Each structure stands twice: as C-alpha cells, then as structure tokens.
Image (cartoon, rainbow, N blue to C red; front, side, top):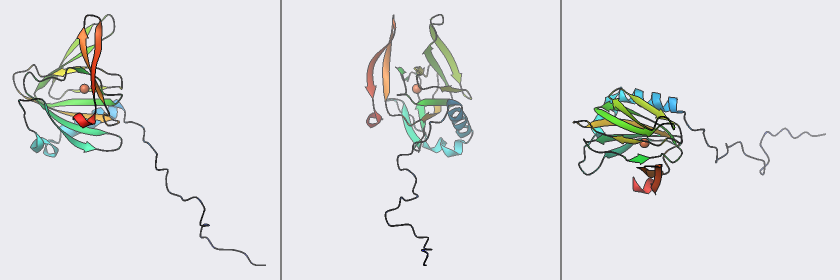
Length: 175
Ligand SMILES: [Fe+2]
C-alpha cells in the first residue's frame, strides 16, 4: 500500500489569500479626536505645508488611508464652510493656530448653538453631524481634520426659518 504524503495543495484547492473585499470598520470619533490632537502637537509634520489663500479656504490632504484621511486647512478672517454634512463619515477637527467659531443646530429647545473653538480645542462628531465653521477672528487659523471612512461626498445646507434645507452636494472630484 502506498500513501500520498505530499503536502502540496491540489491545483484547484482554495488559496489562503485574504478576501480582497475585506473592509475595515470606520474609526470612532474619539480615535479621530486623538489622531488630530496628536498631530497638532507635532507641527514639524505639517507646518511647512501651510499656505494662505484669499480666494477660498486653503486645504491639503496629508494622509489618505483606506479607513481614514487627514486634511490640513487654513482660514483667513471671514472664510467659512457654510452648513455641510460629511457624507456619513465620522470626523474630528482641532484648531492648531488661531481661533474659529462653529455653528450647529441643537435640539428643539436649543436652537442654533454657537461655539468658540480656540487653539487647542478639538471637536469630534458622528456620521450625521451638520455644522458651519468660520473664522470670525482677526487673524488666520490653521486646523487639522480627520474623517473615517474618507469623505465620499458633502452636502451643503441653507439655514432657513424652518431649519436646514439641503441645497447642493459635492464629491471628491471637487476638492
Ligand atoms: Fe465639517
């Protein structure tokens, strides 16, 4: 009697390669918060990239991973985002230099919330969050933003008497 002792797999056996379509869970807002905070404390990683633009907010993507991305943004006085969502991504941003103001709608009893976001402050939010971020200070501001999953779309809203009204949507080809 002969035994087949070969360890080679049969030519048509399944391979051990991981599934190509495996997707990782998005990072949590608290993880994104920690990420931008840590990066803000290491200006050697990003300060040399900063530019200021009178045309619009200046921005540059610093990190592009499968499960998250990081953006560096500068804001001159008067520059703002308008109300927008993040296409279902979770996010966080921290003010590294200067000061911003953030507007959001609270619950029915709260109405419009206006927060000062000075340097050293970090805001983190879930996938449904809508806000308007603006530089109402007298000097420029620099911020670091992280999103997970990476931004796939952003809708813009107008604040009207009845609440937020969706007005437009943009995709990655526009940023
Ligand atoms: Fe935002």
